[in-house]
Length: 243
Image (cartoon, rainbow, N blue to C red; front, side):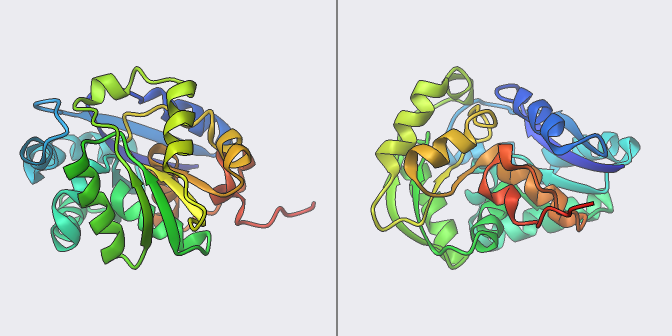
C-alpha cells in the first residue's frame, strides 16, 4: 500500500481525490487533510496567508499519523503567489515539519509538463488576471513557455467549486492556442477528474489539471508510476506490463 498525503484548503472539489483514488487501484490510498482557507479570495494577500507555514503545519501531524509517505500542498494559487524561490521555501518548510518528501501543486504542473515532454503551453485559469499572470510567471521560471493565458476573473474558490463540465470545457477551449502543445487548467477548487480524457480528445492534445497533477506529484515523490488512462496522458507514461 502506498499512502499519499495531501493538504487541501477548505472544501470545494475534494471529491475529485476520491475519484482519482478509485481510478488508481486498490494499493494506493489518498489521505486528505483540510487546512484553514481563511478568507476565500483569489487575492494575492489572502492567498499568501492561506499558504503560510503556520496554516500548513497545522495539518501535518494528522497526515503523519495516517502513514503518508509524501505530502503535497494541494493548492496552486496558494503556492505560486510566493514566486519561484518563495514556493521552494514553502515546501522546504513543509518537508521539515512533516519529515516527508514534500511538494505543491504549482511544482506539480512544472514537473508534469516535463514528464509529458512538452514545452509550450496554454493556460486556462479561473483566477483574476493579476493572479493568473503570477502563475504564468511561475511556469516561465520553471522553463515552461506560456503561449496563451486565459483568465476568468473568479474571486472565490467556493464559486469555482460550483462549475461543471460545460464551464470547464468552455474555459479549456477558450484558452487553447495553435502553438500550445498542452493545455493547463490550474485551481484545485475546480472539478476536473472526471473529464480529462474527454478534454484531451476535444482539444487534440494533453491536458493537465490541478487535482490530477497533485496526485501524480505525490506518487512521483514516492517513486510510484501508475498507468491510469482514465486520468489522461500524464498517467499513461508507464508501459503496461503484460503478465
